[in-house]
Image (cartoon, rainbow over all chains, first blue to last red; front, side, top):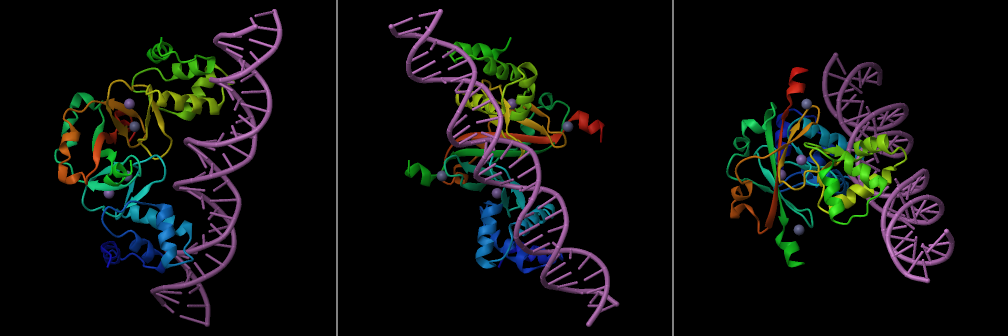
Length: 139
Length: 139
DNA sequence: ATATGGTTTTGGACTCGGTCTAATGGAGGT
DNA sequence: ACCTCCATTAGACCGAGTCCAAAACCATAT
Ligand SMILES: [Mn+2]
Ligand SMILES: [Mn+2]
Ligand SMILES: [Zn+2]
Ligand SMILES: [Zn+2]
């Protein structure tokens, strides 16, 4: 049973068949699907769900803070249900696979005042890039 | 006179009026223009330059390693002529202004082996987000 | 100077990811 | 049952970017 689903129910979010399948599709570890991937998997469970509803629902989940938008490549945004434990990403430059990672160290502290240009800095995002074992084998 | 222009000439890149204006537009510090911004500024100097040529030229400059693509927001890619001194970015969450920054520390070393999932990790990209002084004032 | 052929430029059609809208449907509250 | 919202839907629309075939341009050979 989906963690996300539990939390949403707990928050009194109105549950519908469509919203349920979207939440179900987004369950798991290292899940970073595009909207169209979510739609494809949702259709498998509920054939008539529309693309618009998937976008609407994803947008709401993001507003609720239950899902994160991840923009690791310059193509489609990806949706990440792992919103409650802060993490960064490791991306395969060939196939695009994305893993959640938890680097040690605090990059925030590594930005000296002289490099802040008067900004109030509130957030830092780290993206590692490389080649996944699968792609390395299929070189 | 443009540093970029010098380097391109030195590499024997065929220079044309269109390519020159694109290279000129891309000169300077903390420059991170979208393709359409480059086009707009190029048109000011050479009224009939086409959008396609701007895209072609930017693509070539990227292939040559003379310009970097930066994807700090999920909208248009930005083009960064500061390709020869590695750096990261500080982005204003409100207006989108982008500064080049040089954090201390080595985020690469902060990713333990147990968090690499067998990837051959080759690159890391750090994006700081905050509010620029200008936007803070206009709150 | 002219001819030749490869390279560059161009406008427009096209794709892709995403948003918006107006109409329809359905869940709850009375 | 009825009414009022909210959710869902199809499809039009949009911005960023790519692709293509035709035209213009440039370097060189003659
Ligand atoms: Mn993640
Ligand atoms: Mn930069
Ligand atoms: Zn891979
Ligand atoms: Zn700002």
